[in-house]
Length: 345
Image (cartoon, rainbow, N blue to C red):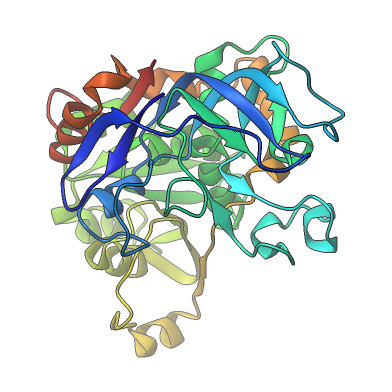
């Protein structure tokens, strides 16, 4: 089969790859219909690989059609349309039963496309371990693109908003307006936020947020703008969706007394200079987390089915998998309005 493989910094290649196949009786092989690039994939693209190895298949967002099932798989059969959770759990431990897949007692936090240990989804087919737990049939009323957004982006955005302690009528900030941040604008409105201040360096992304009902703010003047708009109270909740040192520091500056900052961006800086005195003076709550994707589906699926959330609107490019290298380049450079890059085989 064909797949996108990581060969080093800014070196993604569309190449032949070993066919996906069953290795356990609980596995499912899924023929890929759509897959996507996640913002966190850029860490690998930039050479910040989670493994020193190269040559593995990347990606962790995909929907497809069941091609083959192990003999102990009970919920799926060949031909079923399914969505694949980016978070991978054993499905049998107390943590998985509780919906805390990131605390899985067997595998810890596992995700596709970070190394050779679990090959990625940007391929013509994918092996899904513990298929009965890590797959879900695409629900009635959802198309494939909506389902694709439920494999990681929308649940991660939802997690960030949940952990920001958003209350009805609150002033909320969204820092970073990639797909996850823009989904967050919609989500906090559904949660009852009063005013939503949307920040990004890219003017076009701020314009998209404004169309969703947010107040667009240039990060360069955000502290002064929000101080004036809130009469000095600043923000009750801030959802940080980038993970860069600068965006984390800005989120801390924007939070008001007893405010909450929820970060879902990936930051690999083990020496981040955390401003303890400011955090203490403001009495801030600061949270970071990875997403147990499956645990968000029951809440999010009805919101998409009913039209209250529209995650598919943030897809900017639909490309064949064979153009994967160019898609990564465009996405990294933010060229041509690149937002959510989706591949078909």
